Image (cartoon, rainbow, N blue to C red; front, side, top):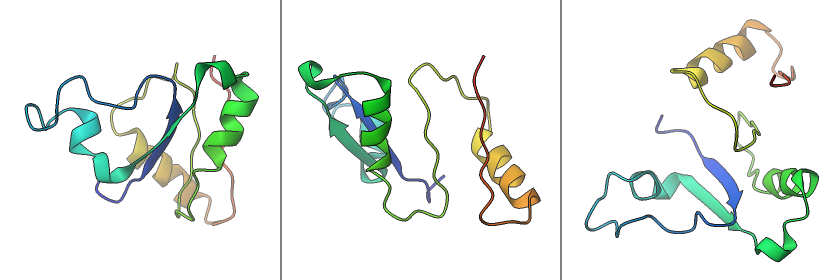
Length: 101
């Protein structure tokens, strides 16, 4: 997924577990040019609504935009599936939405 850009805000995800020179296959190393990380001081983390607001501010005009929470587990090929669903609407302004249960 070379075209994908991921932006996320987190309290403790600012550095890989090992230096990238030792283990370049870590997610934060392998995709570092496709990640936009917003660090939040734990004292300023005031809840999910504020976190979603910050996440939305990472949008930079990408063709597809999605926001999710940390507890989401993704299925294999989720990106291909959701783009297929979006294109099936034949409406570039359509909004796909769901509530996890």
